[in-house]
Image (cartoon, rainbow, N blue to C red):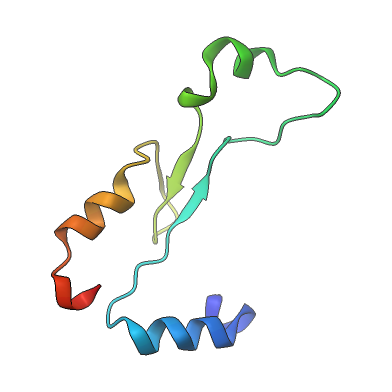
Length: 78
């Protein structure tokens, strides 16, 4: 999808990294309305929301996952 939608960015990434990993991030888990307060969001707090979208499309609430991937990758791949 990246190659189709943003071919120059895709080419830059694949030229500079041999095994890139593409992740997504949802910081809020849902859109917030400017006029209607989200009571659950207010009650639970922002730290309880958000997730990482993994390359296979699954999600994880572990927002440190990208750091784990970086720390486990050999330096020459970064």
